[in-house]
Length: 314
Image (cartoon, rainbow, N blue to C red):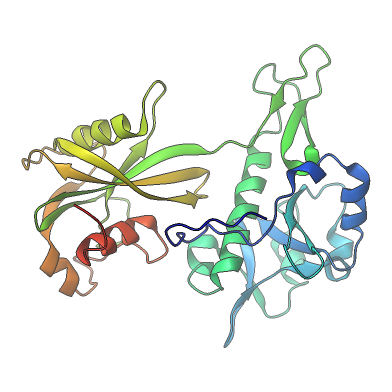
């Protein structure tokens, strides 16, 4: 597995598995790994994962024997990859959403179903990235049971990384979809622009973000989204980092951008309000019902933190 030497990755990135794409079409190899007692299975239930709490919380990464009775033809699964060391242990995601909740949790004594936004704050980072990978892939399968071209049923292939239309006259191949979005820390001197949406948790503020449109570069999306939502014009758009964001299926591409104007005119269909906040004020603010930062696991929090601490060129 090739390792990247660059900025430290954001949460949900850095999956500690070699995806070994060339083995996804080797049905004999995949079948052998499915029946290998050393293989690990990552359960997903309605986009939630099983987490064992305690002094050292951990995600459920089970061997086959412990959940063998649950692995039937109604349990969609996908091959995730193999560990790059210790003999290359195969990992699979399995969607148990068709089972009653109590049937699944009964197999995990001491474990509980948990949303990824909660479990990421408990389990080790490398396990959180595996849970995000599994959640994203299983979500795609659940939403793509039928061909988008003709409406016939589709079936999984390439070990869960493609779906093929079963209509002989169509045969369209569908691939896992990731929606691209930009997320931006807009700054002007010692101030940065943060916003709030009414449906967010009480007091939470964050950076501005939006989806990429057809025929648009990432930098153009930054300028358009910031202006549409806040009325602020930006320039000097600089890439920062990216983050897989399986809520439900996005990649957040992070940028820093310098404001060319300061007057705010929010789109009230998008934002409750936006405001300029000073660097020193943000550095010292304590989370409350009036103001709180985005979650520590989010790229938004990292963008704000890097700007506050001067870890970027502006």
